[in-house]
Length: 94
Image (cartoon, rainbow, N blue to C red):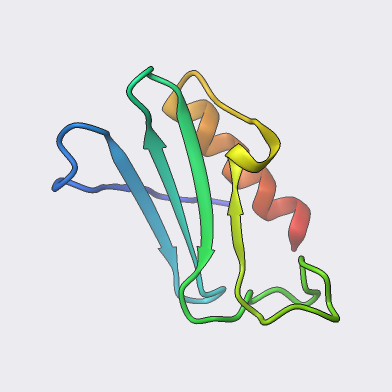
């Protein structure tokens, strides 16, 4: 799965990249914090997760997905390592 990220040029202090997938309705964001660690966020921009099976609790799901690597305490040392984690996240949940 090819996931291409575009750098947000307005963010000059904390580097940020994003990927918007219109087919699934998900946006993936990678950002670098002041300590040089990389984190990622996956968010639904059309208020539906786009997956066949809901990732969240199906009974209480409002079809709005928000997932952050910080939820599990995951930080990455490089952009490529963080990007690979996002690709793996998508593969597991399809």
